Length: 282
Image 1 (tube, rainbow, N blue to C red):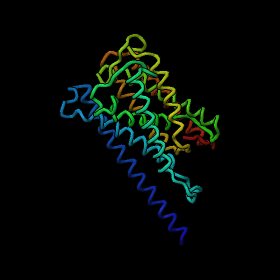
Image 2 (cartoon, rainbow, N blue to C red; image 1 turned 45 degrees about the vertical axis):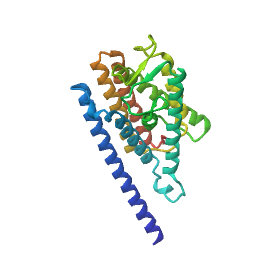
Image 3 (cartoon, rainbow, N blue to C red; image 1 turned 90 degrees about the vertical axis):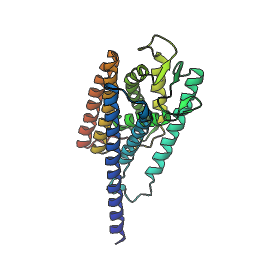
């Protein structure tokens, strides 16, 4: 009887998580579609200026929910006294704090990204940094973690996984940064580099993404989680790739196209490994 009650509670918990995944996905993609349409046509009206900041929050929330789904224990693990939500929440808080801290350093000292400053498009500032930037780091690192390759619960395995996450993270930035800068989200003080963005910025994105990803707990994702994470990653590349295309930034457009193809291949490879009995970890 107790076992049946436990299974029922677990089923209800999974059902609630599934509903949360669906609702957060609908909200995110609806918000993204409306915002992208406005940016590619009439522009975002001043009265909707808050929408850019909310986009980052919805992006982070959806990535968080997908990571939570990836951490859902299997039937064999359901009776273990785990607290996946607490572990994931602490990791997300750590990424928010770490992201805000490194952004503060970047804005005030130029290290490690290079000289730049933020406009008010992304919402209110905390010591010169929009508070939504912490959510942006959760979103980008989280979506990159969802599609990264296999990892092992050993130190070398975790470090190799972090390198992969850092790589997927910086690939997004090669598209996001030029497109966002061209729309005035932030402004770089120097010239040269990649469309006016110093190369140190991309090296820093790789390093920060890799290091902060170590705060996320390891987990083996299901096929569904891999596919949902893949679509999230690809739609972000598509969104900023289209903005870059409209602004005549063709380098980021080609990188976005390459990232969409490479991420598709990465996830398809992991799904084949899973089907053949070889696990892949998030």
